[in-house]
Amino acid sequence: MKLSLKNKIVFITGASSGIGRACAHEFAKEGANLILCARRAEKLQQLSEELKDKYGIKALSILLDVRSYEKVKNAVNSLGDEWNKVDIIINNAGLARGLSKIYEGDITMWNEMIDTNIKGLLYITRELIPGMIKRNSGHVINIGSTAGHETYPMGNVYAATKFAVKALSQSIRIDVLGTNIRVSSVDPGMVETEFSLVRFSGDEQRTKKVYEGVTPLTPEDIADAAIYCATRSQNVNVNEIIITPLCQASSNHINRK
Image (cartoon, rainbow, N blue to C red; front, side):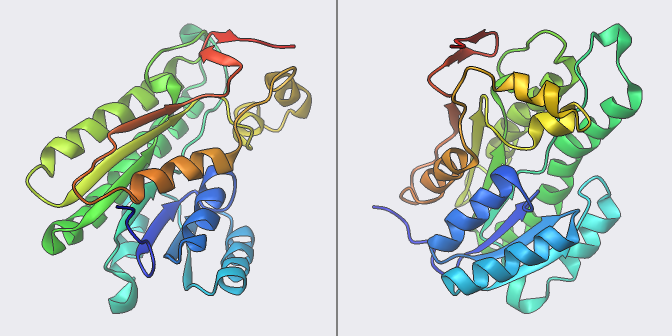
């Protein structure tokens, strides 16, 4: 039986664009109330108003950099009675920076990926899961990557962070075993978002080449997978969804026309 998400509280990181924004729309369509977190205040506020107007749900915007444990802790502590019973976490905030051989890597870029993709996920989960344990109810949905299953040339540190997301998803599932908390990972291949633009520091020409001759996934495809995980019967845990466009057989095998 499909579970209803009406009036569930969904906490989404990286909500201002891409997969996070698409998740916000899809969960709002299902009647969920949303806590939207990101670093871009204006985009976040616009999204919040749009969702409230379009779907008649409640939305709370929080300006948040998940790389800071203190900021995460303060954000969670400030939720108040109306918002602090989070039902679903969408750990979506993540990024890639650069594309280089390990011996030519930029340490600053490494730290940004590690701090966002691994530590950010840890901080959010650490602060929100105790409430789920107390209520014996909840769902953690981590947005991973096919890069967490196989590496690709010059994707070293990014892949390492996504392998960590895979390991953490499995570990959290073991740690909450015996409770009613579910843990899922949605691991996409090529999705057209701001991902490559961020990776290449705003280089639009280089970004265009990534999607040349292919039809990549959309953020909505990934949001749909997250909805699938969240709406299964309570006794069903979707451990992992690996999702790629038809033109992509693996990280290294892409059919371009």
